[in-house]
Image 1 (cartoon, helix red, strand yellow):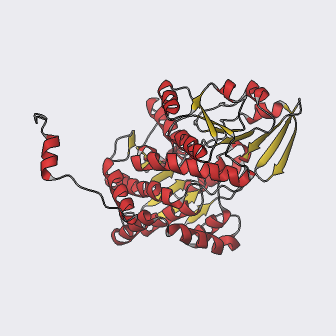
Image 2 (cartoon, rainbow, N blue to C red):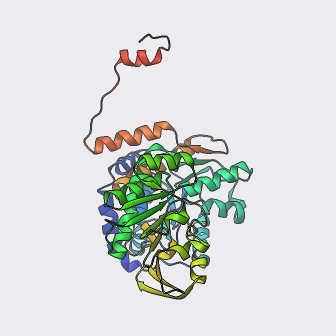
Image 3 (cartoon, rainbow, N blue to C red):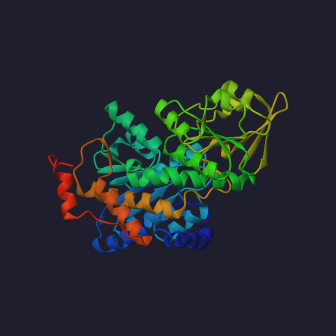
Length: 416
């Protein structure tokens, strides 16, 4: 059972799914293991992830392990309709289409929950929150959940601190093979790819302001720097701000940074990063983009209230004409630019290969262990397995410690 925009798009979707499979060797290795072992036989897995070819490949991997898989999108603008149709044609239960209304968005989450999943795979925690707030009848049968992104982990940690979380969650986002690669290299490349593809704008020589210097912000700043931008970082954390400065970037307050910005990219996971009077100080032609999970970092209402006209001048680009004649440009409605913009394809398949491998193995970990109600990092053994499989797929060999070296490191009394 599926609800997608157009099943006639399935053939194109399957072609794209097969393309990413060629570039996701770790997940393909795990899929073959799952096909032999069938660890999820009799288990239903529900997911709320960005519905695109790489995500569908994760669903097919879980399906190969015997699971019934039901999937929906975690962002109304990030679904690829051809990939959704392709996944449905390949036997997954897919609910979602691009440009859903808020009502439709939560309706498709409930469509997935109608399958009564045993394990949840979430991105942003909307499905987990929906279960707790609207479908408490499912709480007694859910074994646990995996959470993909920083924003979702923060929400769930807050739930746990307040005693509201009712089942265990593996914070896949906190796995080293996720945040060191997906958050940094994936977000960095895909965000700049989407911005350049949507605007046809040159990055070199521009003042690019990156709001936030977590792992995603580091990646965006690094890619912009590599493209020849003059990178400026804004931060609230003194250690991260110091790190950004020592990485060679200018660091200043948002109010000062917006005055010289040609392009502003928010990557914080927090609300109202660009708001109110910030828009009054921006240069004519400044572009605004968000790479945080939710569309709350750039306050669209404040921007619209200060403008005298709004016009879509290019797909995924809105022009806001200010009272003094300046024109400011908002990309992808302030949503996740690397997936919601017209040219947004998400992270490269080689990056999501690791992240989704961690997801698949974490789902198996939930199945095989009686976990406490908590938000916990994926076991280091999963990280180690994924990293070694990735290195092998890349044709890279590394050294191992000798017995003597192992003994030396283990002996606290060993002299120099």
